[in-house]
Amino acid sequence: MADRNAGFETITVHAGQEPDPATGAVVVPIHPASTFAQDGVGGLRAGFEYARSGNPTRAALEASLTALERGAAALAFASGLAASDALLRAVCRPGSHVVIPADAYGGTYRLFARVLAEWGVEHTAVDLSDPAAAAAAIRPGATALVWCETPTNPMLAIADIAALAAVAHQAGALLVVDNTFASPYLCQPLTLGADAVVHSTTKYLGGHSDVVGGAVVTAAAELAERVRFVQNAAGAVPGPFDAWLVLRGIRTLAVRMDRHCANAREIAALLAGHAAVSAVHYPGLASHPGHDVAAKQMRDFGGMVSFQVRAGAEAALAVCAATRLFTLAESLGGVESLIEHPARMTHASVAGSPLAVPDDLVRLSVGIEAADDLAADLEQALDAA
Ligand code: PLP
Image 1 (cartoon, rainbow, N blue to C red):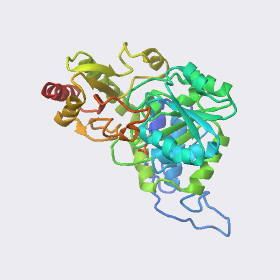
Image 2: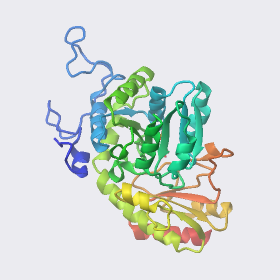
Image 3: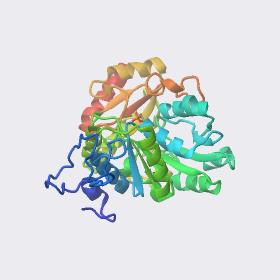
Image 4: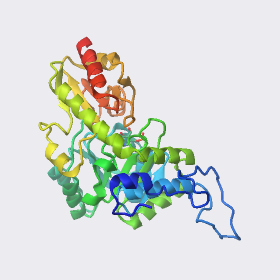
């Protein structure tokens, strides 16, 4: 069993994933049972009663996530947005205000603007790479939380987590970090002062584009209990097979992330030197405005790269259509490389809003294939555009 001081790679393989005490199976079993026999009324054998409230496979995933993020507790959900929704319902009330990033993931923005707004939760979108802008947006007494993504989707902006935590805490607000793009291998926001982390486990944690899931990990047990109440009361839990797929992905998180980062670094360098590209957004480039903060709070710079095509939107769409190895698809964080056009695809829900993304932008999720093959594929697509 991995103790809390074990190295990250050891935690990925062992935390929550000890051999099954009943059989010795070295892989966590998938428990499909929806209900659990009781030894007399209330006599629960291992704390499990009904699978919406708790399931052993999901409990193993939650133990793993708690250790990976160095938190007090984790709750797993059926999707990243279900996780965000549960956390927000645990913390916000009608009249609450939240500060969100000016380039939040489109689905997160839609949750704030189209769902929570209807329930009286107001938001202000600001550039969170500037902690002073966050401080100015806070409404003392009303702001319940600052919601931060770093790196952001799709512009790869970097927020200084420790600085934002100080700003939020000074106003009595919580800092929540969507850590999906970095993964806990590259960044552990709770150790930098954040109160909660959310994940779309669909992405790097699952890592194989074969499951949709989400998680909340909290620094304090008390906040976790409030989220656990919503998890059970509203019920957006993952099924046991989905929980198991995420657990299996986690076992290789560290080695996958190393390759994602190495490949992305090469691709970003290629794009930065290509005449057809007018801008590259990748925090690993020394020219990126958030490079120093990223270097301070991340182990490496991640596998996501976005860039703008000099000839404009039609050319960007043509690049997306011309790659052969980079598959044209939404989502990210799987072993295979993906390409997409955020304005028309992942971020179509922010079109016309203050969060609209440039239409000449292309986003890459750089996979773990041979870097030379990926580079050759992009070059031929850029040449064809
Ligand atoms: N957060 C980020 C940064 C994302 O990119 C996504 C999905 O793309 C989500 C949250 C939502 O996760 P899910 O699609 O699992 O609901």
